[in-house]
Length: 451
View 1 (cartoon, helix red, strand yellow):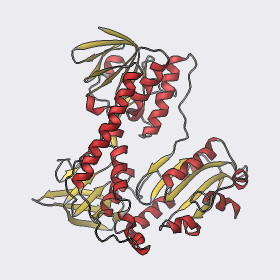
View 2 (cartoon, helix red, strand yellow; view 1 turned 180 degrees about the vertical axis):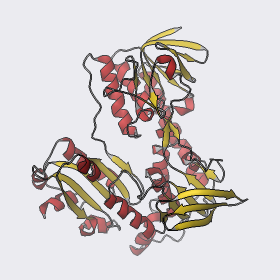
View 3 (cartoon, rainbow, N blue to C red; view 1 turned 90 degrees about the vertical axis):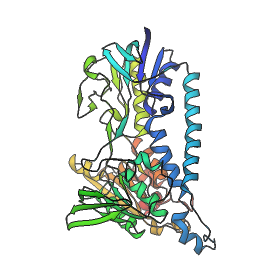
């Protein structure tokens, strides 16, 4: 039987970072992961990293017409899915090896296998009992199954199987118009695939404000992507080379056939089969219940990352990991940051931070909206895409910047400038007094307040 100060279950972004923070402070730490090839968790292996690599691989194809207008011939442009798949494997191996080396250098013990709580102070892993004073659950999430469309990994796939494709399909139905669905729709559309997004709610990227969602729908449709909102797939039939579906919409029933169906309706917490009840840990709808300091209903066990009901984002997991490490080491307890940037890497990109209009209305906060369209930005025109806008949401009286959103080129980068404004409680006047370089996309932030 082995004894540790802290045992962390799950070596994704949350668990990996938390183990490093604790080991640096002199704690004896054990990190448990199901197998060696899953170091880095969903983010590295089936999520953020491979998805962004795939999007980057087709970025220039999305600008083909504009590049040709500048004199660059794109006639010989070809795409080989198998080459991209091999590049993905190589990149992930490289990052995973670096993460594994970092874990070893920090002095953290690593055990591979499925962990399950035996009682409040011990877990069972591959025939061995591991005990600790404190535990951190960071088991992440799994693909959320569709109530009707069961993934067969051939004709009906999840985002995991996209990275295993050897050839580009002729047509695809993307079920789910959130961040994951919109990103993959952009990827396939850039390759000339006939893409149809079916979103159950009345807006794409439902967490974003209505004006952002409306603009995204318009821009995707301009690229040739079909978008159906308030859509519910009610039946399907598999054929040898296609899947026929029936879909109920606000405008009636749609019947169509697709070579491939991608189910992207989000992810569910990976909390089953880890013996939560044995450790007196409460969960609701699969999510582990935590307090403001990320403690579970067992005061010696914390939970972080996708397994708790906070935004399922790697950067949120990093912050929660740092918070829990601090709370384990110190007598004083702190809460994780609530100011979180949300980013979607479709084309156009979407990003937001701080309070949005729905939140402000719910909290009865009087606010003003300041908006600047990229059509008036020189750099946007130089880059060949001046669609979208930046908007700031400010307190009506104090003019303190409470939040903001961007849809357009480099939105996922520029949003961090608004993050700083919100975090430091800057005002519109503070922005006015700054100098932004010209020509840049970022100077739209200055232009919008100078009007």
